[in-house]
Structure formats: structure tokens, C-alpha cells
Amino acid sequence: MEDMVARSFCEWSWKENKLFELALAMVDEKHPERWEVVAAMVGGEKSAGEVQQHYVILLEDLHVIESGKLDYKLGEIQPSALVESKESLILSSHDDN
Image 1 (cartoon, rainbow, N blue to C red):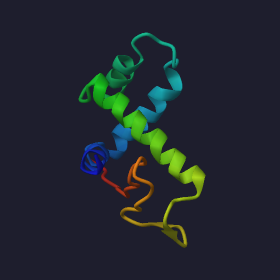
Image 2: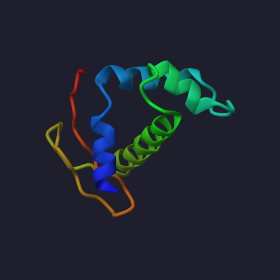
Image 3: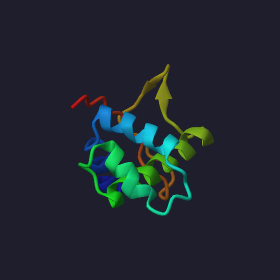
Image 4: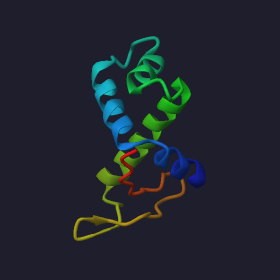
């Protein structure tokens, strides 16, 4: 699972992540084809399933941040922070592909 999370996060460029965030804000949660529409808005390189999985990872990471379990030093995010087994790894990536 951890490898899948790391691989999924690293395969998203900075631009794709920004388009993903914008698409999430624009497409209603109740839209019957939400993930297909978001995938198209990201640029069509990601499948609806990949986009939905990316969203799940985002929610897990948000939960870790809000719970105060993020491992950091003076604002510098560590490459990974191991948390409870059901939660994802927090990964730092600045890929501008």
C-alpha cells in the first residue's frame, strides 16, 4: 500500500495537481460522472480511477495534517512520516514536469 501511495503521488506533476485542485472546486461532488470530468480537466492523461485514488490520498493526508501527526522540523516537511498503519505516508515532492 505504501509503495502504491508513493508511486501515485510522484506520478503527478505540479501542474496536474493544480488542475486537479481547480477541478475539484468546480465539479459538484454529486455529479454522476465527477471523476471522469475531473480527469478530463486534469488533461486526459489520468483515468477516472487514478483521479479518484488521488483524491482518497489527499483526504488521508489532510486527516494526518489536521490530527497533528505530521512529522516536521521548523516548517521543513520530511520525505516521509510514518503514522498509524491505516493512514498514508506524507511525501514531499516538487516535480514540475
